[in-house]
Length: 114
Length: 111
Image (cartoon, rainbow over the protein chains, first blue to last red):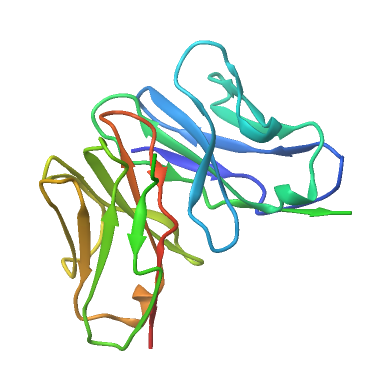
């Protein structure tokens, strides 16, 4: 089975400051990794994904994440946040083969202040 | 291209009733998955359907069931509702082995 731990439940940050959301995962098999964002009263939107290849993945809205296999981490970063980045962010993992269900972390609420 | 459409968006039921939620996937997507989101348990996998067959099931009681039709549309049903079933139910569709695209969810309140 796969599991995901998001190390911060809440991250307050000032506008134009950088932000990092930490995600560690556990799996005995090869996995794909994802970051999703959820705005209030909405569904989940994919920010970025790691399938293979370069360990630095760039996504939408200026977000990027780095896959570190040795540390089993997939941290999300943005160099300069906006008020509109206020949302909940979920890290998720899925087996590379066979089972397509996503296992999610508990989520990190990012609040951007002016 | 239209996204994943879930209906209804909001509904209120009382304990003991049953509810049916509907999901229309993105055109061409044959896989449909359902997830339950609650403040206490977070996002949990319910089940996945592909070509009208349930391919995977999460750890939920038998009161939770689903089905998929030949046009890939899916429904999930919860019978004998309990207060703890209050949640946001999210549907996601994908092509085989592809990324999941989520709908906006159906928010169920059980009184």
